[in-house]
Image 1 (cartoon, helix red, strand yellow):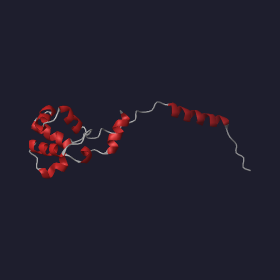
Image 2 (cartoon, one colour):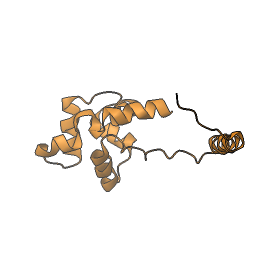
Image 3 (cartoon, helix red, strand yellow):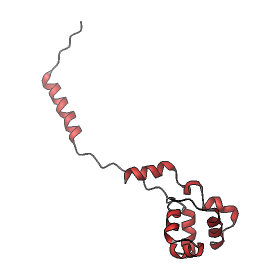
Image 4 (tube, one colour):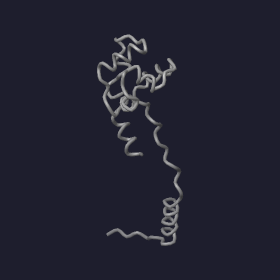
Length: 118
């Protein structure tokens, strides 16, 4: 049997020190910067053309609310809308995958983290 001598005063100081450390106000947790918006290349091209979403929606033949849902990734783009957008913005069709990447160009992890942090 092993016996150890415990200094209760020293133990009390250690516990008080740890307790003070645990109850000390914590620094705010830094969150990850916001992920890029969906379809960022498309947004940049619209900005380059000085085209607002209302006008772009009109040129596409869709409602502005529909465009908003497409641009935020809440609704998928239709193929004819993608080609029309490429025509309007004078972008070659071989770059369609860059302007309309799968999922809008953002990962599902960043979308779910936005939902949980909101």
